[in-house]
Length: 113
Length: 114
Image 1 (cartoon, rainbow over the protein chains, first blue to last red):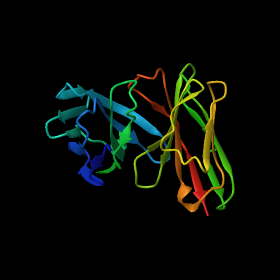
Image 2 (image 1 turned 45 degrees about the vertical axis):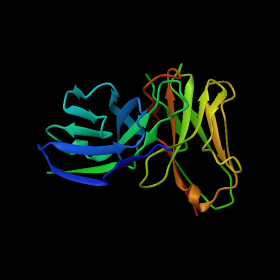
Image 3 (image 1 turned 90 degrees about the horizontal axis):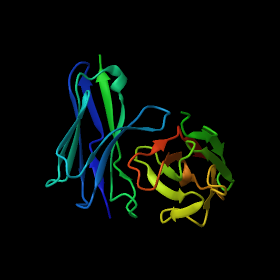
């Protein structure tokens, strides 16, 4: 079945860039997502990328996709203390297919002042 | 636009008791999802509804979990009887159509089974 792997923890200094990495196993993944979860809250969709893209930029967020290596990364520029949260990578198959969202275990990002 | 509403936010029960969670999706959203998120893990899909029909319940432990969405709007997830391993956050999400790439999540219900 599908598997999504992430490192558990990342610490950065305020103002630095953060890079959160994710690997997945299923080559038929069509959409890949990054969600943010703050304490006591649900998941907030940050950004997503379609599998035929290599890169997507949205303000401070840059998503890179290496489809050959099945590697996804999220770069947060100028990281702020408000960015401290758990970040989940997720993948799914074609819309309307039986393939549902599969999440990684999440990366806890801590931003130090 | 109001988001996905869930209640209660917290629930503590003893094992073998029953519990029910309620979800009200974003108005007009036809697709509703229930996820279980165990501490330290990502969410795992339990069941997906399209209007009031079940699309996928392959990971729902049907011997103790049940869910319904009778009028295609609100949904209820029930656990009867609860086990210690059911301690988790139960997240509800909705999306505008089955093929939509974006799911909107509620704040979740944190269940503790003692």
